[in-house]
Image (cartoon, rainbow, N blue to C red; front, side):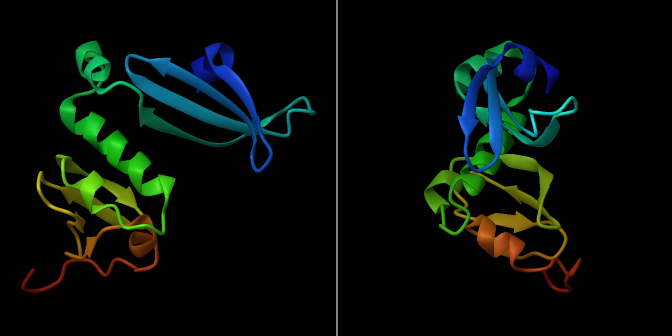
Length: 140
């Protein structure tokens, strides 16, 4: 976060404040800061995006599952209400990541992410966040 603020590109965004973005080793780190008029600005949010997949893999900071997880999280967040099976299908995410209380993973060819706890399948972020995880389900 600190490096993105110190060395990143600065852009103003009317909806959420100042955005600082830094690409390091093929991954873009974005940090949003508000209340910059005071002595203690507030970090509102931050996220990562894959800027260059090959550079990210070559840098060695992230393994292929990490890079696919970053790409998948970004794709789900870009248009939360839209189903994105074609952007899910090429990803391999074998270490679950959490969205909306669900622990999600996917395998190549699957057009959905699957919750490892409740077994539900999702194709959009809105679907994930609108359904509560009920934990392990019998028969799944």
